[in-house]
Image 1: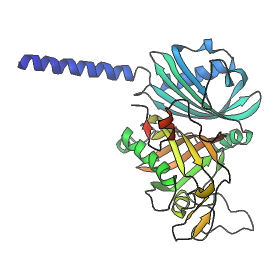
Image 2: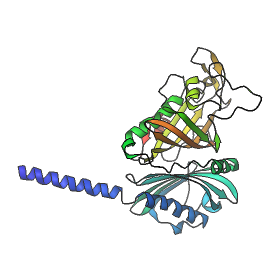
Image 3: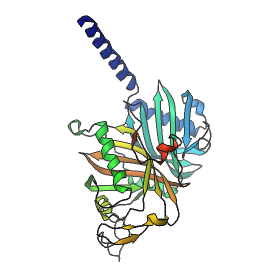
Length: 330
């Protein structure tokens, strides 16, 4: 009996080692290379130039399309802004980069799943805004630096910290757990939306008395102000790449502003405030977090307005309407 148990244990270890080897058969360079192979094929308007699995799925801005359609027809060049979140353990890679579409600047978020040397999943979000593409190229944050090995966090902990951002922003009340570094910055659509310079001749708004949050405040000041409660639902929270080496978590998510009575809420000091869009509004967002020593240091996002209540094309209706985080890398 003891011999059988030892044999079974040895077999289990062998299977585990094989499974682990399968998970990392495409390393960081390999995964990032697949992104460029996809981009080069799209510029050539030819999906045949990159290996796709037989039943590969492709979406652009939440819509399931045939390979060769959408951006495949219009992409003309890569830009100079490039940020990767490689996840060799899961065989996934995400990318945020500037592009040119028929000569016009745009921003592109890409998520690939690689299985046995082929692209099994291709998810894209094209943010067609020239100022956004130009803005990211000027800012240049790429997060290519590795986190010192002794300071690296587990995958689960990185996802947990990133999700605190969404939980703290949904129905923001100023009283949540906000894990920001003191110098945290957020860049949305190529523009600083935190710590912005106060225009000449104007006074910096006071977070304790203002009725609307300000891009001149820090990450912490914005969240503690409680003035973003009009973001009443943050749903379909899909964590698609976790780059442990660089401390990056890459997500796709939807922000809902349901308008109506959700525009009126209480500030932390008890004041009644009315803010936010006057009509139902949904942002489709690709958002990435750089996390250092357990705190969010920088946030990069591109946002595109979409039909209210839209889903990602990768979720059930129940998942799409839920605020529960889903780590799809597991």
